[in-house]
Each structure stands twice: as structure tokens, then as C-alpha cells.
Image (tube, rainbow, N blue to C red; front, side, top):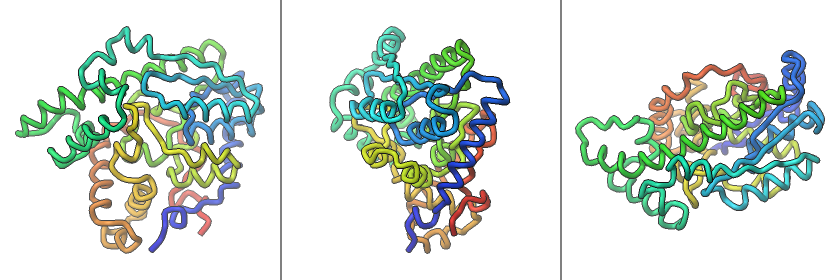
Length: 322
């Protein structure tokens, strides 16, 4: 039985070299004065910022932290820790006032969402139990539930409001960063990874759907490998990914499967393996079916144009170590 880090092992030093070469060429090609990255305190943006500083020097790398009501306290601590370690200033601008003005927190499903972590998780689990599908999977259906009128009504009055609020915050963050990048002649970089893209765990036209996303070719498992190579602080490398959706809700809880398992299925799919061959690698049939389902349902999210990333963690990407 293989583990994800073994199955998807890459030569992290070569991945870093390719990404850094790309970033230098990008800035030169566009005659830009630097790059701008939204530093969330998460692993992906931390890796991208570190690569950018190595490639361009700290004077041409600019970051900003844009928290809201549901941002975990650890996110700001980690963002500031990384910025300090790299010698970067970290301006912070809360988007909460703007989101309140736009009524993002007004629906009942959102009013209580900023209070109880346990209640948030209980509600999402209850929805999953009642309708035999994670709320995230329902969101990928875009409100189309066939003849299941009860599911449609419950979704639109609860999960639908959570999704709308999630989308609004990520799109607003993108607007802020795009305006700042344009004002200063900086190139705005996105920190999305391959795993998120392949299962639709991002907001279309939001901060994780930017045209230039240098590490989008790497699975989350491989981003972790790159983070270890770059010697990022352990607290950042080991943190649990969170989406700023509701307090207490992590990426893996919302999607319904750990990143390591997701990556093994996605890699098997891209290698053309049958379900039986993927199962032989150590993932369950339920996990395979779940990942293949969300990959299929999220196809509409992958329609936005993106530049080809400089690093490719697939089996044909030239980075695999075995």
C-alpha cells in the first residue's frame, strides 16, 4: 500500500528552480515593478511568497492580509510569522466592514456561523446525513436537484446562503488585490494548487482563480514537499487548511476527504488507472467514487483561462522522483 507522499514524490529542488526562473522571466517580460500575493497564512500562499522572495528579492515582493469575521486567529499569526521571517511588510485590511455593509452575514445560516465551531460542523454533518451528500457536492450542482424539492428548499435557505457569502468574500478579496496591483504596476499571483482546481474547491472568479497561479500544477501533497524543501516554519507546514467559510470548518471537512487521499485518486485518474488499480494503491472505493464525482461536477469551474504553470506534478511533468 502506497502513501500519497511516496506515490506523488517530486524533486522539490527542481520544482523550486523552475518556479523561480519563471517568476524572474514573468516580471521582466511584463516590465513590472514586482509581484503581489494575498498572504492568507495558509501553506500554499506561504510557499508561493517564499519562492517569489528567493527569485526576486524581498523588495519586489508585496503581500497583504485580508481577514474577515470567520478568519481563524492562527491564520494571521502564521501570515505575520512568514512575513517577518522573509523581511516583508504585511499590511492588513479587514474586509468584514464591507461584507457587513453588503449583507453577507445577514442570512440566518450566516448569523450564527461566526460563533460556534461545533454547531457549524454539526449542521454540515446533519445536511450530509439527511441528503447523503456533502453540502460542497450540492454546491457543485448549482442548485439543480431534479425532483428532490425538499433538498432544493433546504439547500437554498441554508447552504446556499453560506456558499453565496463564501463566494462574495473571495471575489471581493480579488477585487482589492487587482486594484492594488494595477496601481503599483505589480503582477498579481494566485496560490491555488492542482488538488483544489481538480475538485472545484475554489471560488470561480475569486482569489484562487487568478490567471497567473505558478503552483497550480502541483498537488497539495507536492506543495507540502516543496514547503519542507524551502524549510518553511513547522507551524505553517503542519497547520490544517481552512477556507474562511465558517469557523471550525476546514478544507477537508467541507470537501469530505483528506487531501492525501484526494491526491492519490486524482493522480490515478490522470494516469488512466481503473478503479480497481487505484484501490490496489490503498484508497477505498467510496473515496474513489467521491473524488471522481466532484471532479466531474466541478468541470464548469475550470473554464477560466490560466497561464500554464511552470511546475507540473503529474506523472508526465518531469518532476517525479521515481
